[in-house]
Length: 103
Image (cartoon, rainbow, N blue to C red; front, side, top):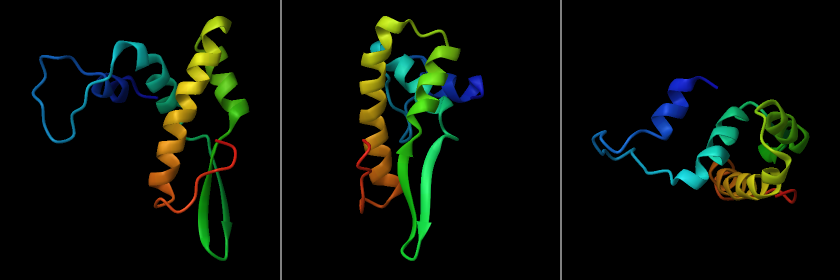
């Protein structure tokens, strides 16, 4: 994940606010960083009804946390936060029509 995307997402308070700006609480920064790094790890299936995004590959989530050096004691809470973001993203990506049974 390019550092500029992460920096833009967690930008400083001295940046001007616009319609696309939002604040990230410090306790959520690690979850956001991992979520952004997993942007290419979404599972999808195609069928007669089109493409349905099923969710993140959880083995990829674990690998990402390990590669980032997330302490084992922090992984369970981080995983729960990722699943909250995953569920919200699934509703957007699937036009609110379907949420993965995995999430």
